Length: 396
Ligand SMILES: Cc1ncc(COP(=O)(O)O)c(C=O)c1O
Image (tube, rainbow, N blue to C red; front, side, top):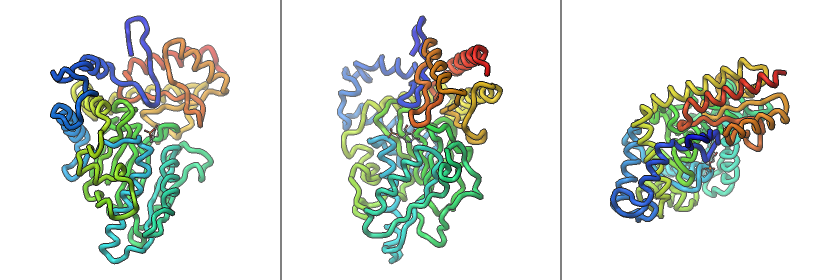
């Protein structure tokens, strides 16, 4: 947030920076939303004014992402982590539904996971945890590739020749899952993994949601938490193709709150939705459309910010990227310095210049500059200036 004397640069990975004009609009409307005399937080979720906010948010998301009419937009709770379970339960249910109709309801179902960083690793572990509890069918969880198992660390996306995708002509594949941008390791898919078109493709886009155009028809489910690119924590957006919606009584037992069809049938209001978070997402979408030129505009801005940072890192003798160039994240730029002491000094110096939350995730260390949609290029330029100065003082 800026004021004239003390401009703070927030490089946090999430909850992350929110565009200043969005915060100001929310502040302006805080006590009186649309002439109601009430804060949006005080409105019934079933009231007309909130209904209008929800609908506009859905319409703007559909417009921005070019979401076809046979998809539903769901506002769910429990963060992206809850979706690790929800995806498994709903999509296994969908496959079981198909198998029941074919008279093959006892046959094995396979779920395929790309494991390219900490978040897809958590997702596959959740599937492995839940699989034995499915009573109707044996479920096999297959790692298409596990980069850490194969290479000893995360930091690359191996080519298709190294993938072990399950053949859908020989097995019942419920879905293929991947995490488009691994927030902790700074690894982003530079392409959409090519899978058999009969197999539902699922992407976790939590940390690069709306950072560039995306071709929704390639996916059965695209989902992400809001707290990086879309607003505050508390709401998770799930864009799901309607043929994935299965009666809650079919397939593995799942809580109603995790059931996609229940959410879709109730317009995300089976229970009280996180109204304030949805409102903030709505404001952020308006900002993207009105001030940033939609997804094409924001993609250009994001590319420019990331390119500058990686160019500096690659030219430097001090900073080192642990990620292969072809799959470096445009959102979370991770880098190392030669020693942890130097990294500490780097962070302390940055703090003095009001550059905050640059510390890498506690599981990996190092530095991480998260430069989401809301991060202005000027702030990235300030970071670059600091990095250049720091290197001059500490050349190895
Ligand atoms: C890519 C990705 N997936 C999932 C999650 C988990 O999100 P949540 O904390 O909202 O459950 C995160 C959180 O940072 C993330 O970056």
